[in-house]
Length: 394
Image 1 (cartoon, helix red, strand yellow):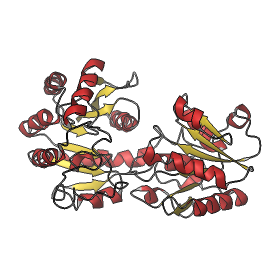
Image 2 (cartoon, helix red, strand yellow; image 1 turned 180 degrees about the vertical axis):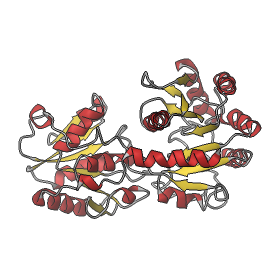
Image 3 (cartoon, helix red, strand yellow; image 1 turned 30 degrees about the vertical axis):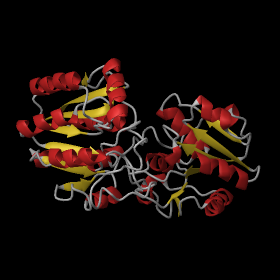
């Protein structure tokens, strides 16, 4: 069996999932290739790079003026299609198609003609909206009813500076997905799968396969974090994000720092230099870690992870923390509650920082730790579900 995956990133964010799926395939005696545009892939993973830095930059510029994400990069896409034909995979597995690197209409025209089984893992909501990747924070339901138009998030990623093309994008996506007869959707949470039932994707086969993580890396680990950042014996309240935008809740952490007393220290991982400089004195800001092992050490050193995000199709930091034996307090919205049981932490209402602070105090005072032996999301278990799906399709 040969599986070709397509994703924005090679080994960052959703790219890690594509890499893990490839390694699961290889371990079972199958073949695979990861086609990607940004970042890189590990040396053991066969890969195809889509486009280059110039084509990605140009795609992003055109998108900002036209609001037609996924309509440029024609040369890069034409080359990719020829490479797919040469490789001749049994299954084509799509991940994120936004990210200024591929021409989606060209790709779907090829997929319709190729008549091969296609899996599309939806890591966000972009597949069935006219513009945005998330809509909960904006409280927008146009995708569910009359169809997208007059997008309230036009200037959010994938940003458009002037034009609103959401109505046409919505219509074209509907036509494209229904042109591919062998399209099978995978959602990373029950929440997202339920959302599909109100979208134009409702008639397509879909299933839930949760994301998984490497429990050989994300496990209770020792590190010098407390010494390095002079935390001492204070209770560490951790926040982790790859990019700290509005939906990740940076403002809520700053407000939380005003509620918790000096027995607690809030530490945020993944901030840029400007964000680190803006933090109050009672918070610690860290940029990107050197890798997942360092991140696992930080999770393990923390007393609790607070996830203040209001829009997540799944909630990867939650399960990474739990695998390291660190309990979680997170908001009751989108797919987040599916990642935290009552034995692993607490779910509170969005922006209810007094309740969040109470739960954080309870965890720290009781020194609660989840039982890692009953961890629910090891990658071997979750990616085995992809193997079964592939076998069904061929």
